View 1 (cartoon, each protein chain N blue to C red):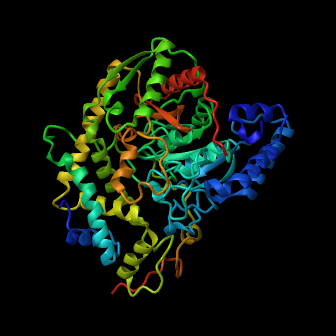
View 2: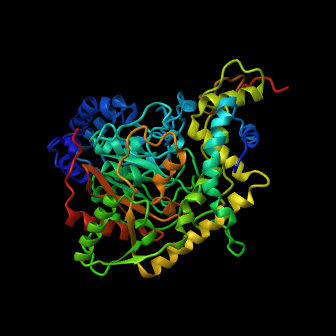
View 3: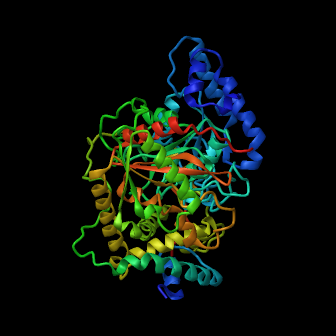
Length: 94
Length: 484
């Protein structure tokens, strides 16, 4: 097995995905098949190969420190499920 | 011939000569939508009222004697992954069912500035994750050539809309083949430009190092015309390249003499449907007859491309999709006990299975203890694949392969087997990993279903792609239409 139910539960928790027991069972089965295939590359000897994170060479892109146009608070809040006093409102945290 | 069946360049001539009005053209396309949309289901949102307002503005300009560009008045469909101010943008996901963007993506804005008439937003696999539109949170789009079959994905709605004449052209996005594969399965032209050539600002991110916007068109000439108005540096996307972009219509030259075409053996091997392979071989023969030199080549590390892709893309997605948390936009699960409960339930109820699978895959591949074995290795494989392409391009101007290993498959055939679905992308994924341009154009049929020819080019090699594609199109003379 490339991945266990316990690991799937842990990963789902890290990703903030609530799963039912039936889903844990199903996803474990499916992810196992996928990781089995994807895992083919784990055993390759690539110690001398540099990694590529981007296909084109990238360096920091700077701009002038000047105020540009940006969203108004009303626009920024227009899609929020719940707002309060120009802020996003969420359920209690503690 | 009905107006909705015509190409951009044919319609532009008629509009500029005042033979037709933008209103008449828009009416023609919407009458077609009224006739076939029930069967094809390309659109998630149809923006009829706005479309007629935009058409009216173009007609006023033309009547006033103002010159209009080649895209003015042309009915255009947009994949629902690009933000459109004031128009619902769902990404095919229930979690964004009610999302109305406050701004418009740069690519779409560029076309709006040119005077396109937006017909609506098209269906797609949820967050562009899929190869069939079956992962849409809303419904499955059908292939206009056979309504029992998928149109491909993830930009299946955009491809089906053009193939079914429900739009004159459309925009899609391509992370691992999501423009080229549906273009192939629907018998139209699709282009994924070089990474960075088109701004990604306002394109809802799936895998940021792979995503690229491109057009679906009815022919290669239209592809060049649209590309002219998509490209260019955008200060809002720091990965967009700073180059002087050419006039791509100048590449529409019917001449293959001296063009060196390489055929990667790995993409004509086992796993490719023999009937599809035969159609590709015939296409290569035609190109050789017209003066191209055709020879076999090799991309030896391509066997690892699928593995690397299905680690890198989910890894980036797991990070990009963290933003959908029920706080700032989109769906929020009701009556949560506390913040954590709200996150867990919002994402459980808002995302579909494929998105959950990829988020978990990516989270796993990036997690402590597995990072080097999966993500680290995948990034190194990416280097090997880029080197393979660079080496091949020392000897060849373009590489050619099938776009998809099979023609359109039946709806439901692959939904229970995610890995088999992933294998649909085997020919298209390598190009994304190397950031290269890739194009698909129709080159024949198998059992009444279209086959796509994939042409892969060097970095910023769009001009050569267009020349090869145009030359093939002129000699092949594709003139088949779906039996709708």
